[in-house]
Image 1: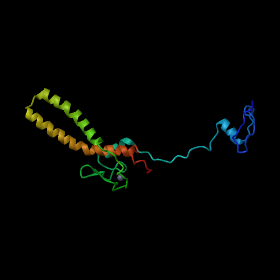
Image 2 (image 1 turned 45 degrees about the vertical axis):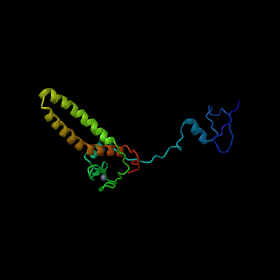
Image 3 (image 1 turned 180 degrees about the horizontal axis):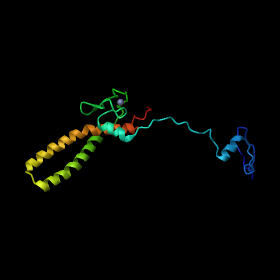
Image 4 (image 1 turned 90 degrees about the horizontal axis):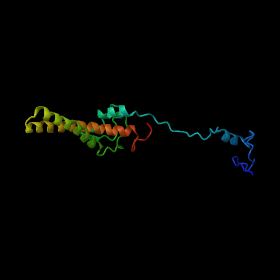
Amino acid sequence: MRAVITFCDKGPQTPFPPFSAGLFPCKRARDLHEGAMTDQAVETQHISDRPTWPALAKGFRRKCPRCGKGPLLFNYLKVHDTCGDCGQEFFHHRADDGPAYLTILLVGHLMAPALHVTFVQWRPEPLTLFLIFAVGCLALSLYLLPRLKGAVVAYQWARRMHGFGQAD
Ligand SMILES: [Zn+2]
């Protein structure tokens, strides 16, 4: 039985098994056999690292996740199109309902146990309890919402989601 080797451009050349004897029809055939193919190395584009946690911290401070200096938001919740300091584009963000969801999640999990403990420990007047927790929930929500929006946009930037994938 004869196997035809067609590695080279010269067409069918050498029958099997010259490999086992260390004889190869051409250099490429030998490289293939020895796993020494180096000419197929893929040229990868250099993409700089974007650490997630520092970006989240900058976003929570409502600053640009890239430089940490330029403001990320204006008019409470509006996201700037670009960073005024480093020029980073922000209009790619898709925060959508994420910040509101996270705000409800955090405020609920903080205030519900606090409500329970307050009621069991001190039994305040119902109106007093309502006023304290209504104001507390509102204040905490208004405090967290823009900060969590900054963190969500920063997370999308750090993970190169949506349009944030361009090279720095
Ligand atoms: Zn910036």
